[in-house]
Amino acid sequence: MRISVIGCGYLGAVHASAMAELGHQVIGIDVDERKIAALAAGRPPFYEPGLPEILASATASGRLRFSTDIADAADADVHFLAVGTPQVPGSGAADLSYVDAAFESLLPHLGEGALVVGKSTVPVGTAARLASRLRADAPHASLAWNPEFLREGFAVKDTLEPDRLVYGVAADHAASMLDQIYRAAIEAGTPRIVTDYATAELVKVAANSFLATKISFINAMSEIADATGADVTALADAIGHDARIGRRFLNAGVGFGGGCLPKDIRAFTARADELGLGDSLGFLKEVDAINLRQRQRVVDLAIEALGGSAFRKKIAVLGVTFKPESDDVRDSPALDVAVQLKGLGAEVVATDPEGLENARLRHPQLDYTSSTHDALRDAELVVLVTEWREYRALDPEEAGRLVAGRRIIDGRNVLDPVAWRAAGWVYRGLGRP
Ligand SMILES: NC(=O)c1ccc[n+]([C@@H]2O[C@H](COP(=O)([O-])OP(=O)(O)OC[C@H]3O[C@@H](n4cnc5c(N)ncnc54)[C@H](O)[C@@H]3O)[C@@H](O)[C@H]2O)c1
Ligand SMILES: O=c1ccn([C@@H]2O[C@H](COP(=O)(O)OP(=O)(O)O[C@H]3O[C@H](CO)[C@@H](O)[C@H](O)[C@H]3O)[C@@H](O)[C@H]2O)c(=O)[nH]1
Image (cartoon, rainbow, N blue to C red):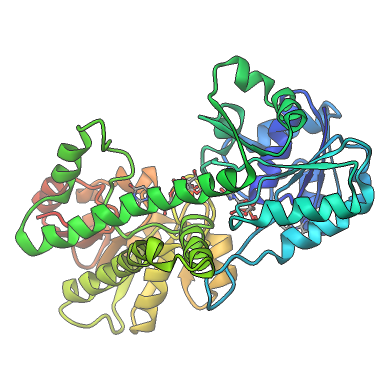
């Protein structure tokens, strides 16, 4: 198939490369010239394991090209819309201006029988609105909504081997075209749900809301555990053995962040309010509030560990990205904690294997080092907030020789409290005795 991917940010760059890897002829379009230049040169503008390899092989094969000119998408049979849907500051609603602008720019270039496929995460009702726009101005084209479920850090595998495919369509031929695109996954047995636009849009935000709720549920349990001396990790293990509950996404800690979960639950809540159904999703406001409270809890634990004040104390912050295997610092709890501690007068030195460049752009006021040793040296407190493998593997004795005070806040509950305490550290996790 000839495919265009409009919007080559995180999702679009991975999707375009993966589609070319599957043998399709792909053109990636973005309005950001620097991004397009980097991708065309085979350099992903962000860190994602496995992406450089498929980007290189797809561009070398001639199956993947990039352009800033939407007219270059005109030859494609299928056009994926993968532009951003960020949060409107204040209201929390999704900002659809990028989707609308990309869609409008594409309209004059849609060939006979072309299929426009929405990939971006949008409020329910968006696809129906765009479909009626197509009927008015490009009746020879049609629309499908095909939400994306990839996880950063596993994006290539998740795209090539998705755990399900969801098509929101209004006609059978749209589903057949998507089947041709995803033939490899379908032949491998990937479940495929063909449904209407509204359901497809809702599946995406419902999935992220469920994941966010699971995390906030366990974080609420960790608050109760802290007050009662219980151990939230053992609790998660125990309830997780119930197959109806499952152990995944029950890791208590500093909470969820990133470019999806926080903004998606807020946009969903805002959409429910618009529909007059605010009460139905009222619990998501609580999910958000519990989540944000975890960042404050980590800051409070840090102050407590330092005897009541962080002023002029050196604090090593391990991790700035919202999760490991990513350089993404969008709504990162780790970076938020670092900024709050700096605001309280601490001498914060933050480190991260991949996220420093992005963190520096957002928060130039912080001190950064790429060396874990330099961050730890002479620190009076260590705060682990992103569970990169190298931080999980830290040796308490070795780390203890570098710091000025053996105090650690394990904001991801990934270290062994027994081993750290045995090495003379004051160890605090969240909801762990
Ligand atoms: N990042 C993820 O892991 C992920 C996973 C699933 C779904 N999503 C959803 O996918 C969408 C994109 O997310 P992202 O993280 O890739 O965002 P992003 O901000 O990384 O990328 C968006 C890209 O769209 C480009 N763009 C904006 N307007 C354009 C236009 N008119 N024409 C062409 N390009 C334009 C921007 O320059 C940018 O490169 C969002 O709706 C998001 O919720 C993201
Ligand atoms: O038990 C857990 C699991 C995750 N997290 C945090 O939750 C956030 C989100 O993690 P994850 O879902 O793995 O990252 P994303 O790459 O943002 O992926 C989510 O958001 C994407 C964009 O919508 C979806 O496509 C994915 O399916 C969905 O998992 C991160 O800050 C994690 O640290 C926890 O705190 N505890």
